[in-house]
Image 1 (cartoon, rainbow, N blue to C red):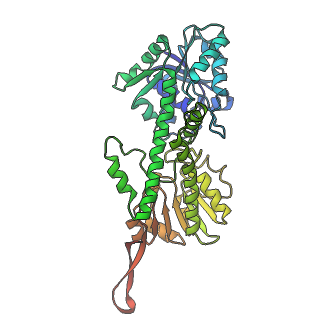
Image 2 (image 1 turned 30 degrees about the vertical axis):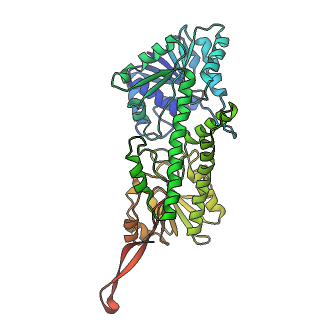
Length: 453
Protein backbone atom coordinates (compact mmCIF):
# COMPACT_ATOMS: atom_id res chain seq x y z
CA UNK A 1 0.00 0.00 0.00
CA UNK A 2 1.27 3.50 -0.83
CA UNK A 3 1.14 5.72 2.24
CA UNK A 4 1.89 9.35 2.94
CA UNK A 5 2.86 10.50 6.45
CA UNK A 6 2.63 14.20 7.28
CA UNK A 7 5.08 15.20 9.97
CA UNK A 8 8.63 13.96 10.56
CA UNK A 9 8.64 14.22 14.32
CA UNK A 10 8.81 11.42 16.85
CA UNK A 11 5.45 9.87 15.96
CA UNK A 12 5.73 10.49 12.22
CA UNK A 13 9.21 9.00 11.92
CA UNK A 14 8.39 5.94 14.01
CA UNK A 15 5.13 5.36 12.13
CA UNK A 16 6.84 5.78 8.75
CA UNK A 17 9.70 3.42 9.52
CA UNK A 18 7.46 0.74 11.02
CA UNK A 19 4.89 0.86 8.22
CA UNK A 20 7.75 0.46 5.75
CA UNK A 21 8.98 -2.50 7.79
CA UNK A 22 5.54 -4.06 7.28
CA UNK A 23 6.08 -3.83 3.53
CA UNK A 24 4.23 -0.64 2.68
CA UNK A 25 5.68 2.06 0.41
CA UNK A 26 5.93 5.13 2.61
CA UNK A 27 6.75 8.77 1.94
CA UNK A 28 7.23 10.89 5.06
CA UNK A 29 6.81 14.63 4.47
CA UNK A 30 7.73 17.65 6.53
CA UNK A 31 7.65 21.37 5.82
CA UNK A 32 11.18 21.75 7.22
CA UNK A 33 13.48 21.46 4.19
CA UNK A 34 16.57 21.14 6.37
CA UNK A 35 15.08 18.25 8.33
CA UNK A 36 14.03 16.49 5.13
CA UNK A 37 17.51 16.87 3.66
CA UNK A 38 19.05 15.39 6.81
CA UNK A 39 16.63 12.48 6.80
CA UNK A 40 17.40 11.72 3.16
CA UNK A 41 21.01 11.30 4.32
CA UNK A 42 19.67 8.90 7.00
CA UNK A 43 20.50 11.45 9.71
CA UNK A 44 17.73 11.14 12.31
CA UNK A 45 17.20 14.28 14.42
CA UNK A 46 15.86 12.48 17.51
CA UNK A 47 17.25 9.76 19.75
CA UNK A 48 15.14 6.61 19.86
CA UNK A 49 16.81 3.20 20.22
CA UNK A 50 16.86 1.38 16.89
CA UNK A 51 15.08 4.08 14.91
CA UNK A 52 18.09 5.33 12.96
CA UNK A 53 18.98 1.79 11.95
CA UNK A 54 15.41 0.95 10.92
CA UNK A 55 15.07 4.11 8.84
CA UNK A 56 18.36 3.43 7.09
CA UNK A 57 17.34 -0.15 6.35
CA UNK A 58 13.97 0.84 4.91
CA UNK A 59 15.52 3.56 2.78
CA UNK A 60 18.02 1.02 1.47
CA UNK A 61 15.14 -1.36 0.69
CA UNK A 62 13.38 1.38 -1.27
CA UNK A 63 10.27 1.40 0.92
CA UNK A 64 10.86 4.71 2.70
CA UNK A 65 11.70 8.16 1.44
CA UNK A 66 11.37 11.73 2.66
CA UNK A 67 10.05 14.81 0.90
CA UNK A 68 9.11 18.42 1.56
CA UNK A 69 6.49 18.35 -1.21
CA UNK A 70 3.50 16.47 0.18
CA UNK A 71 1.14 17.69 -2.51
CA UNK A 72 3.24 16.17 -5.27
CA UNK A 73 3.22 12.82 -3.49
CA UNK A 74 -0.47 12.73 -2.61
CA UNK A 75 -2.08 11.79 -5.89
CA UNK A 76 -1.57 8.03 -5.83
CA UNK A 77 -1.57 7.17 -2.11
CA UNK A 78 -4.29 5.10 -0.48
CA UNK A 79 -3.92 6.73 2.93
CA UNK A 80 -2.46 9.80 4.59
CA UNK A 81 -1.39 9.71 8.22
CA UNK A 82 -1.49 13.10 9.94
CA UNK A 83 1.25 13.09 12.57
CA UNK A 84 1.84 16.79 13.18
CA UNK A 85 2.18 18.60 16.48
CA UNK A 86 -0.72 19.43 18.80
CA UNK A 87 0.67 22.02 21.22
CA UNK A 88 -0.92 22.52 24.61
CA UNK A 89 -2.37 25.85 25.75
CA UNK A 90 -1.91 27.01 29.36
CA UNK A 91 -5.48 25.98 30.23
CA UNK A 92 -4.89 22.48 28.85
CA UNK A 93 -6.69 22.96 25.55
CA UNK A 94 -5.04 21.42 22.49
CA UNK A 95 -4.12 23.54 19.48
CA UNK A 96 -5.55 21.63 16.51
CA UNK A 97 -4.56 24.20 13.90
CA UNK A 98 -1.65 22.11 12.56
CA UNK A 99 -3.83 19.01 12.22
CA UNK A 100 -6.57 20.96 10.50
CA UNK A 101 -4.16 22.79 8.19
CA UNK A 102 -2.45 19.54 7.19
CA UNK A 103 -5.75 17.82 6.38
CA UNK A 104 -7.20 20.79 4.51
CA UNK A 105 -3.97 21.33 2.59
CA UNK A 106 -3.59 17.76 1.39
CA UNK A 107 -7.26 16.97 0.75
CA UNK A 108 -7.59 18.52 -2.74
CA UNK A 109 -4.63 16.49 -3.99
CA UNK A 110 -5.85 13.07 -2.88
CA UNK A 111 -7.48 10.54 -5.14
CA UNK A 112 -11.09 9.58 -4.65
CA UNK A 113 -11.73 7.19 -1.73
CA UNK A 114 -8.40 7.86 -0.06
CA UNK A 115 -8.43 7.90 3.75
CA UNK A 116 -7.04 10.62 6.02
CA UNK A 117 -5.92 8.98 9.28
CA UNK A 118 -5.27 11.16 12.31
CA UNK A 119 -2.29 9.78 14.22
CA UNK A 120 -1.69 12.93 16.26
CA UNK A 121 -3.15 12.89 19.75
CA UNK A 122 -6.34 14.96 19.53
CA UNK A 123 -9.38 15.65 21.66
CA UNK A 124 -12.59 13.70 21.17
CA UNK A 125 -14.59 14.83 18.18
CA UNK A 126 -11.60 15.98 16.13
CA UNK A 127 -11.90 13.38 13.36
CA UNK A 128 -15.51 14.34 12.71
CA UNK A 129 -14.61 18.01 12.67
CA UNK A 130 -11.73 17.37 10.25
CA UNK A 131 -14.06 15.35 8.04
CA UNK A 132 -16.25 18.42 7.57
CA UNK A 133 -13.19 20.56 6.79
CA UNK A 134 -11.89 18.02 4.26
CA UNK A 135 -15.26 17.81 2.55
CA UNK A 136 -15.40 21.59 2.32
CA UNK A 137 -11.85 21.70 0.93
CA UNK A 138 -12.66 19.16 -1.80
CA UNK A 139 -16.20 20.25 -2.47
CA UNK A 140 -17.32 16.63 -2.10
CA UNK A 141 -17.48 13.89 0.54
CA UNK A 142 -15.45 11.20 -1.21
CA UNK A 143 -12.62 11.15 1.38
CA UNK A 144 -12.95 9.34 4.70
CA UNK A 145 -11.33 10.51 7.94
CA UNK A 146 -10.31 7.99 10.58
CA UNK A 147 -8.52 7.95 13.92
CA UNK A 148 -5.60 5.68 14.77
CA UNK A 149 -4.08 6.79 18.09
CA UNK A 150 -0.50 5.87 18.87
CA UNK A 151 0.57 4.14 22.07
CA UNK A 152 4.32 4.57 21.73
CA UNK A 153 6.63 4.87 24.72
CA UNK A 154 9.76 6.87 24.18
CA UNK A 155 12.69 4.49 24.46
CA UNK A 156 10.74 1.48 23.17
CA UNK A 157 8.69 2.95 20.32
CA UNK A 158 9.60 0.44 17.63
CA UNK A 159 8.69 -2.54 19.79
CA UNK A 160 5.50 -0.80 20.88
CA UNK A 161 4.47 -0.43 17.24
CA UNK A 162 5.50 -3.81 15.88
CA UNK A 163 4.59 -5.82 19.00
CA UNK A 164 1.68 -3.73 20.23
CA UNK A 165 -0.66 -4.73 23.04
CA UNK A 166 -3.48 -3.67 20.75
CA UNK A 167 -4.23 -1.57 17.69
CA UNK A 168 -7.09 0.90 18.00
CA UNK A 169 -8.79 2.27 14.90
CA UNK A 170 -11.57 4.84 14.98
CA UNK A 171 -13.79 4.57 11.91
CA UNK A 172 -17.15 6.07 11.04
CA UNK A 173 -17.54 4.31 7.67
CA UNK A 174 -16.92 0.89 6.18
CA UNK A 175 -14.32 1.97 3.62
CA UNK A 176 -11.84 3.38 6.13
CA UNK A 177 -12.30 0.33 8.36
CA UNK A 178 -11.52 -2.00 5.46
CA UNK A 179 -8.41 -0.02 4.53
CA UNK A 180 -7.03 0.03 8.06
CA UNK A 181 -7.71 -3.67 8.54
CA UNK A 182 -5.75 -4.34 5.38
CA UNK A 183 -2.94 -1.98 6.34
CA UNK A 184 -2.41 -3.63 9.72
CA UNK A 185 -2.93 -7.21 8.51
CA UNK A 186 0.80 -8.06 8.85
CA UNK A 187 0.48 -7.30 12.58
CA UNK A 188 -2.95 -8.79 13.24
CA UNK A 189 -1.80 -11.98 11.52
CA UNK A 190 0.76 -12.35 14.31
CA UNK A 191 -2.00 -12.28 16.91
CA UNK A 192 -2.02 -8.60 17.86
CA UNK A 193 -5.64 -7.67 18.66
CA UNK A 194 -7.31 -4.84 16.77
CA UNK A 195 -10.22 -2.85 18.15
CA UNK A 196 -12.42 -1.06 15.62
CA UNK A 197 -14.74 1.55 17.10
CA UNK A 198 -16.13 5.00 16.33
CA UNK A 199 -13.66 7.85 15.96
CA UNK A 200 -14.82 9.62 19.12
CA UNK A 201 -14.24 6.44 21.13
CA UNK A 202 -10.75 5.94 19.69
CA UNK A 203 -9.84 9.52 20.59
CA UNK A 204 -11.14 9.03 24.13
CA UNK A 205 -9.31 5.71 24.49
CA UNK A 206 -5.98 7.44 23.93
CA UNK A 207 -6.58 10.12 26.56
CA UNK A 208 -8.21 7.81 29.08
CA UNK A 209 -5.37 5.28 28.80
CA UNK A 210 -2.68 7.88 29.41
CA UNK A 211 -4.66 9.47 32.22
CA UNK A 212 -4.98 6.11 33.98
CA UNK A 213 -1.28 5.32 33.60
CA UNK A 214 -0.40 8.75 34.95
CA UNK A 215 -2.73 8.10 37.89
CA UNK A 216 -0.78 4.95 38.72
CA UNK A 217 2.41 7.02 38.87
CA UNK A 218 0.78 9.67 41.04
CA UNK A 219 -0.72 7.01 43.30
CA UNK A 220 2.54 5.20 43.94
CA UNK A 221 4.27 8.51 44.65
CA UNK A 222 1.64 9.26 47.30
CA UNK A 223 2.18 5.77 48.71
CA UNK A 224 5.93 6.48 48.75
CA UNK A 225 5.30 9.53 50.93
CA UNK A 226 3.30 7.36 53.33
CA UNK A 227 6.06 4.76 53.38
CA UNK A 228 8.57 7.43 54.36
CA UNK A 229 6.32 8.54 57.21
CA UNK A 230 5.87 4.97 58.46
CA UNK A 231 9.34 3.58 57.78
CA UNK A 232 8.11 1.32 55.00
CA UNK A 233 9.59 0.50 51.61
CA UNK A 234 7.55 1.50 48.57
CA UNK A 235 9.40 -0.98 46.36
CA UNK A 236 8.06 -3.87 48.43
CA UNK A 237 4.58 -2.35 48.50
CA UNK A 238 4.57 -1.81 44.73
CA UNK A 239 5.75 -5.38 44.18
CA UNK A 240 3.01 -6.72 46.39
CA UNK A 241 0.16 -4.83 44.74
CA UNK A 242 1.59 -5.22 41.25
CA UNK A 243 1.41 -9.00 41.49
CA UNK A 244 -2.37 -8.68 41.45
CA UNK A 245 -3.20 -9.28 37.79
CA UNK A 246 -6.01 -6.75 38.04
CA UNK A 247 -3.45 -4.04 38.81
CA UNK A 248 -0.15 -5.09 37.23
CA UNK A 249 3.30 -3.80 38.09
CA UNK A 250 3.78 -1.33 35.22
CA UNK A 251 3.97 2.36 36.14
CA UNK A 252 4.32 1.61 39.85
CA UNK A 253 7.86 2.95 40.23
CA UNK A 254 8.02 5.84 42.67
CA UNK A 255 10.06 8.80 41.51
CA UNK A 256 10.04 12.49 40.63
CA UNK A 257 6.69 12.45 38.84
CA UNK A 258 5.79 12.01 35.20
CA UNK A 259 7.05 14.12 32.33
CA UNK A 260 7.63 13.85 28.60
CA UNK A 261 5.52 14.77 25.61
CA UNK A 262 2.43 12.71 26.50
CA UNK A 263 1.31 12.37 30.10
CA UNK A 264 1.50 16.04 31.17
CA UNK A 265 -0.15 17.31 28.00
CA UNK A 266 -2.70 14.53 27.76
CA UNK A 267 -3.85 14.77 31.38
CA UNK A 268 -4.31 18.53 31.00
CA UNK A 269 -6.26 18.02 27.77
CA UNK A 270 -8.40 15.28 29.34
CA UNK A 271 -9.24 17.55 32.27
CA UNK A 272 -9.91 20.49 29.95
CA UNK A 273 -12.27 18.38 27.84
CA UNK A 274 -14.14 17.34 30.96
CA UNK A 275 -14.58 20.95 32.05
CA UNK A 276 -15.66 22.04 28.58
CA UNK A 277 -18.38 19.40 28.32
CA UNK A 278 -19.62 19.62 31.90
CA UNK A 279 -18.08 16.32 33.01
CA UNK A 280 -15.19 17.33 35.31
CA UNK A 281 -12.38 14.85 36.00
CA UNK A 282 -11.44 15.66 39.61
CA UNK A 283 -8.97 12.77 39.96
CA UNK A 284 -6.98 14.06 37.00
CA UNK A 285 -7.21 17.69 38.11
CA UNK A 286 -5.71 16.74 41.48
CA UNK A 287 -3.08 14.56 39.83
CA UNK A 288 -1.87 17.42 37.62
CA UNK A 289 -1.34 19.69 40.62
CA UNK A 290 0.33 17.04 42.78
CA UNK A 291 2.70 16.02 39.98
CA UNK A 292 4.03 19.56 39.67
CA UNK A 293 4.23 19.97 43.43
CA UNK A 294 6.29 16.79 43.70
CA UNK A 295 9.07 18.15 41.50
CA UNK A 296 9.32 21.27 43.64
CA UNK A 297 9.30 19.21 46.84
CA UNK A 298 12.19 17.06 45.63
CA UNK A 299 14.15 20.19 44.75
CA UNK A 300 13.67 21.30 48.35
CA UNK A 301 15.03 17.93 49.56
CA UNK A 302 18.20 18.51 47.59
CA UNK A 303 18.57 22.05 48.88
CA UNK A 304 18.13 20.86 52.46
CA UNK A 305 20.77 18.14 52.01
CA UNK A 306 23.35 20.51 50.50
CA UNK A 307 25.54 23.00 52.38
CA UNK A 308 25.04 26.67 51.56
CA UNK A 309 26.63 27.46 48.19
CA UNK A 310 27.50 23.79 47.89
CA UNK A 311 27.90 21.65 44.80
CA UNK A 312 25.26 19.25 43.46
CA UNK A 313 25.82 16.58 40.81
CA UNK A 314 22.66 15.81 38.82
CA UNK A 315 22.77 12.47 37.01
CA UNK A 316 20.15 12.43 34.28
CA UNK A 317 18.13 15.28 32.82
CA UNK A 318 15.85 13.53 30.31
CA UNK A 319 12.38 12.74 31.62
CA UNK A 320 13.16 9.02 31.53
CA UNK A 321 15.88 6.69 30.31
CA UNK A 322 16.55 5.82 26.67
CA UNK A 323 15.38 9.14 25.29
CA UNK A 324 16.79 12.62 24.88
CA UNK A 325 13.38 14.19 25.50
CA UNK A 326 13.33 16.75 28.29
CA UNK A 327 9.81 18.06 27.75
CA UNK A 328 8.31 18.56 31.21
CA UNK A 329 11.20 16.60 32.72
CA UNK A 330 11.72 16.92 36.46
CA UNK A 331 15.14 18.43 35.78
CA UNK A 332 13.54 21.50 34.18
CA UNK A 333 11.86 22.30 37.51
CA UNK A 334 14.48 21.04 39.93
CA UNK A 335 17.72 22.40 38.45
CA UNK A 336 16.62 26.05 38.20
CA UNK A 337 15.44 25.93 41.83
CA UNK A 338 18.86 24.64 42.90
CA UNK A 339 20.60 27.44 41.05
CA UNK A 340 18.20 30.02 42.51
CA UNK A 341 19.13 28.67 45.95
CA UNK A 342 22.78 29.52 45.27
CA UNK A 343 23.96 25.97 44.60
CA UNK A 344 26.52 25.01 41.97
CA UNK A 345 25.04 22.41 39.63
CA UNK A 346 27.10 19.93 37.63
CA UNK A 347 25.24 17.53 35.34
CA UNK A 348 25.58 14.49 33.15
CA UNK A 349 23.16 12.73 30.82
CA UNK A 350 24.00 10.18 28.11
CA UNK A 351 21.86 12.19 25.68
CA UNK A 352 22.18 15.83 26.80
CA UNK A 353 21.57 17.61 23.51
CA UNK A 354 18.03 18.79 24.20
CA UNK A 355 18.71 19.67 27.83
CA UNK A 356 21.76 21.89 27.44
CA UNK A 357 20.01 24.89 25.84
CA UNK A 358 17.24 24.76 28.45
CA UNK A 359 19.33 24.41 31.60
CA UNK A 360 21.48 27.50 31.69
CA UNK A 361 23.98 27.96 34.48
CA UNK A 362 24.78 24.25 34.59
CA UNK A 363 28.27 22.83 34.12
CA UNK A 364 28.06 19.75 31.89
CA UNK A 365 30.36 16.75 31.97
CA UNK A 366 31.01 13.79 29.70
CA UNK A 367 30.77 11.17 32.45
CA UNK A 368 28.84 10.71 35.66
CA UNK A 369 32.04 10.55 37.69
CA UNK A 370 33.27 13.83 36.27
CA UNK A 371 29.98 15.46 37.22
CA UNK A 372 30.23 14.07 40.76
CA UNK A 373 33.83 15.18 41.34
CA UNK A 374 33.86 17.45 44.38
CA UNK A 375 30.08 17.27 44.83
CA UNK A 376 28.52 17.61 48.25
CA UNK A 377 25.39 15.82 47.02
CA UNK A 378 24.81 13.49 44.08
CA UNK A 379 21.27 13.10 42.76
CA UNK A 380 20.11 10.29 40.45
CA UNK A 381 17.27 11.90 38.51
CA UNK A 382 16.92 9.58 35.48
CA UNK A 383 17.03 5.78 35.52
CA UNK A 384 19.70 5.25 32.85
CA UNK A 385 21.29 1.80 33.01
CA UNK A 386 24.75 3.28 33.38
CA UNK A 387 23.68 4.84 36.67
CA UNK A 388 22.43 1.48 37.89
CA UNK A 389 25.97 0.22 37.36
CA UNK A 390 27.73 3.09 39.15
CA UNK A 391 30.89 2.13 41.00
CA UNK A 392 29.77 3.44 44.39
CA UNK A 393 33.19 3.11 46.03
CA UNK A 394 34.67 5.25 43.27
CA UNK A 395 31.76 7.67 43.56
CA UNK A 396 32.37 8.07 47.28
CA UNK A 397 36.05 8.80 46.67
CA UNK A 398 35.19 11.29 43.93
CA UNK A 399 32.66 13.27 45.94
CA UNK A 400 33.46 15.84 48.59
CA UNK A 401 30.32 15.08 50.59
CA UNK A 402 28.52 11.83 51.32
CA UNK A 403 24.87 12.46 50.41
CA UNK A 404 23.44 10.26 47.64
CA UNK A 405 19.83 11.01 46.68
CA UNK A 406 18.43 8.25 44.51
CA UNK A 407 15.17 9.65 43.13
CA UNK A 408 14.64 6.56 40.96
CA UNK A 409 15.36 3.82 43.52
CA UNK A 410 17.76 2.11 41.14
CA UNK A 411 20.52 1.65 43.73
CA UNK A 412 20.46 -0.11 47.09
CA UNK A 413 20.98 1.64 50.37
CA UNK A 414 23.14 -1.16 51.72
CA UNK A 415 25.58 -1.03 48.80
CA UNK A 416 25.77 2.76 49.01
CA UNK A 417 26.37 2.69 52.75
CA UNK A 418 29.11 0.06 52.40
CA UNK A 419 30.80 2.47 50.02
CA UNK A 420 30.66 5.20 52.66
CA UNK A 421 27.66 7.12 51.27
CA UNK A 422 24.54 8.28 53.06
CA UNK A 423 21.73 6.92 50.90
CA UNK A 424 18.29 8.50 50.50
CA UNK A 425 15.78 6.87 48.17
CA UNK A 426 12.12 7.58 47.48
CA UNK A 427 9.64 5.93 49.81
CA UNK A 428 12.24 3.78 51.54
CA UNK A 429 14.38 4.15 54.67
CA UNK A 430 17.57 6.13 54.41
CA UNK A 431 20.75 4.19 55.09
CA UNK A 432 23.77 5.86 56.69
CA UNK A 433 27.36 4.65 56.65
CA UNK A 434 28.33 3.26 60.06
CA UNK A 435 32.03 3.01 60.91
CA UNK A 436 32.90 -0.33 62.49
CA UNK A 437 36.25 -0.42 64.26
CA UNK A 438 38.42 -3.49 63.75
CA UNK A 439 41.82 -4.32 65.14
CA UNK A 440 43.38 -3.16 68.39
CA UNK A 441 45.00 -0.10 69.77
CA UNK A 442 46.22 2.79 67.67
CA UNK A 443 46.57 0.56 64.63
CA UNK A 444 42.83 0.02 64.43
CA UNK A 445 41.31 0.36 60.97
CA UNK A 446 37.82 1.43 59.95
CA UNK A 447 35.37 -0.53 57.83
CA UNK A 448 32.06 0.95 56.63
CA UNK A 449 28.87 -1.01 57.29
CA UNK A 450 25.25 -0.25 56.53
CA UNK A 451 22.73 0.73 59.16
CA UNK A 452 19.20 2.13 58.74
CA UNK A 453 18.91 5.82 59.46
